[in-house]
Image (tube, rainbow over all chains, first blue to last red; front, side, top):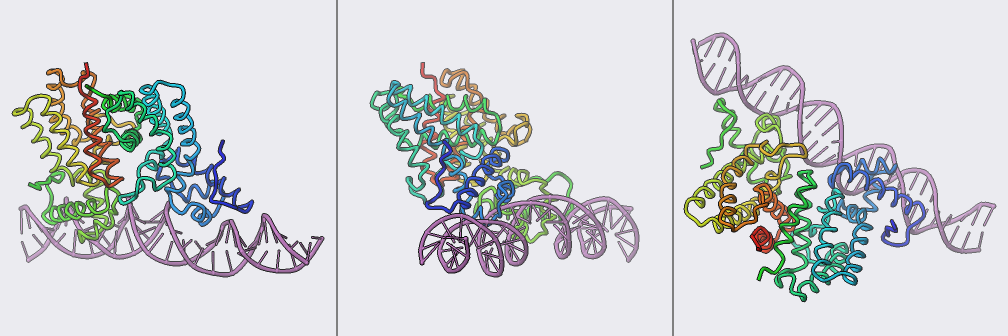
Length: 191
Length: 191
DNA sequence: CAGTCAAATGGGGTGGTCCTCCGGATAGCG
DNA sequence: CGCTATCCGGAGGACCACCCCATTTGACTG
């Protein structure tokens, strides 16, 4: 794990700093949320702020790099659920896992939201990964008749993210469970 | 309308500045979202930044003041729906109106979220107003058997707010409609 | 083992933010 | 008209994101 990949061929010291920054960012984001101070991150990583900005041109880039491993794990879980579980439960189990992860990792929900107004769906790798892993779960649940056919994967991602975002602001994880249950209830076929 | 009420007895110049700030804040928040620059607001209101901070001790206070009128309107609408419409539709109609309003008023959704981790439910007047107006709609829908009995008003508020928050980030209002439909679908009795 | 050079660094500067202090202006009263 | 509590806003402190560029350093070559 933690095989976080920089852009490409990096000098040894550069790679060392890259990973220091990543580690520091992890703790700072956990402590202060997604808008923690970048300067503070650089300070804790014992690195000049210019170095941080060179490695991660935007706050978003840093956030994505920090959570890359976790996302990959969720994708793996999605694939194993697709193999081993019944279509309906597989989807809801995974969405719950996704929600749990985002709720317990401050700052992640913000970075899971689409980048900006004009951005296309597949713009950032993080979305693509989640989509590729999660969409099959949705589709087989729909084929099995467990989920409304007008639901799109992006809906689910945004819904889970939205709830996490709200919970992150209120600070009450128990509430996340209630809301997710309601929301998931809504995607099912009501026939 | 726009009878936005300051704390209480204010000197004429103070009231003038108060309203200038409110107006400027309205446009800046609309343009830049809830984290628009307070300094910029003061600048546009042609007022020293100290004056802004004296009238509105926190960003949140300013946001609430800006949207106070709109909230009041929504509350009024809730009461009239409670009188004139059938229990089930009254609730969903109102929630849709609430969503529409929050989605079209950047910055509002953030201020509708509970203030912080430790804050009690009735901490700020804005929540109290919405609760008092909206909760009756929920309760009669539940009494009529249209909505699950384990749903609480705070759930609905957070759900709508969460969706608006996410939409605000993505910038795609059409998506709000989809998500709200799913979420509202989830609150109904499926028995 | 040196010598070379592109790659990488980080101190310091710029321009922005939020927020507070306090000397000065003024509205509204008698 | 003059007095005073109220209100104002410039200046300044603490912080931040982001960039420039002189300096250092890793890695490759002879």
